[in-house]
Length: 185
Image (cartoon, rainbow, N blue to C red):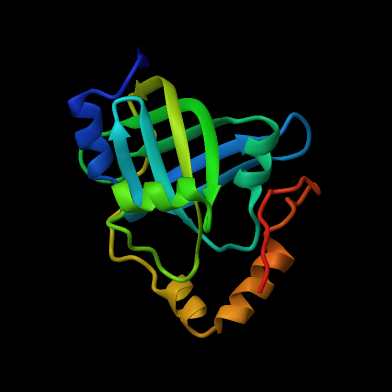
C-alpha cells in the first residue's frame, strides 16, 4: 500500500500544506533516536526536493546534535482529518543556527525575514525519497488551535535569560553529543 517517489509532486505539496503537525526523526550513529512534533506553520517547501522548518528553543536540541554526526532525517506527517494518508520525507538534513549567514539567507527567502525571539535554527532537509501510505490506522482528530505556551514562555524571559537557557539546555544532546550551538552574551 506504500508508494515511493523521487520528489514532491504538486499533490504531495498540497497535502503537506493542509496538515497541522509533522514529526522530525533523527539519530546519531549511537545513542537514542529522537522524534519531535512540530507545528506546520514553521514548515516551508523550498522546492520539490527541499523543505525547511524554523525551529524554536526547546528543552533539548537532539536534531542539531544528530545531524552533525549523521545527517539523515525523516519528516513524517499524517492526515488526522479528511482522507487517510501518511507521508514520509527521507533525506539529508542540516541545521543553520541563528546568527549564521545561512540562517539569515533562509529566513529572508522563506520566512519573510521574520522570526520570534525564541527561534534558534532553521533545519533544511534535502529529500531523496518521498513515501506515501494509506494511513488507515491513523485516528481522526479535530484541530482546535495552536498552543500559545511556548510563545508566552519566551515572552516572559529577557534576552539574557533566553541565552542562558539555550546555553544550559541546547549545547549537548541527552546522549552528550555536541549540537554546535554557541551562545554568548
